[in-house]
Length: 168
Image 1: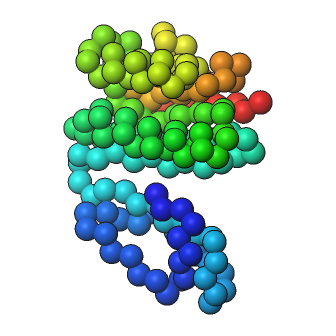
Image 2: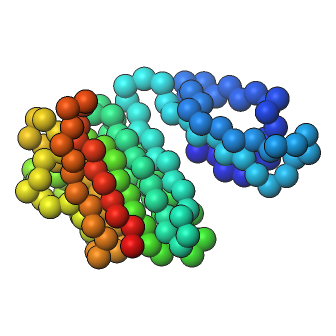
Image 3: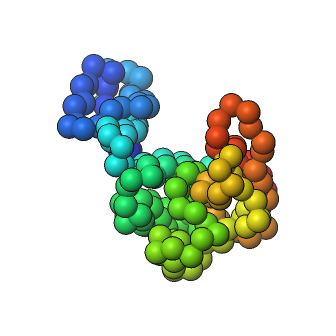
């Protein structure tokens, strides 16, 4: 994700192995402090993190492909957390498809819980819930605010169940 790109609609971006999924540009022909460019990696070994500020909160949506290493997503989230902290956004919410089975003690789970602990993040979903039709909890909702509510909806559209988060 590129922020404050100063880009114009006529500007062209071509980053090898990446596709632009969302873009905002300056509205006039004059460049100014505005614009974003969100890209995702092409292929099956990638992870993405989209972040936005909502009032004094930093909201992140994440996706890690099943074959991508945890360290890839971890580094992206660390970078975004540093940006949030440098902008005095102390309340953080991270949700999405981590592709890490939350209830299973495997190496990625241990690394995820260490990451959560180091960044004062807490799981908001009931750990007995499942977020997929495969009886796993791989879609997670983490936050520094333990008073927020989150849960899982049933879905007939996907094998993943949507997660909702109520921001207080």
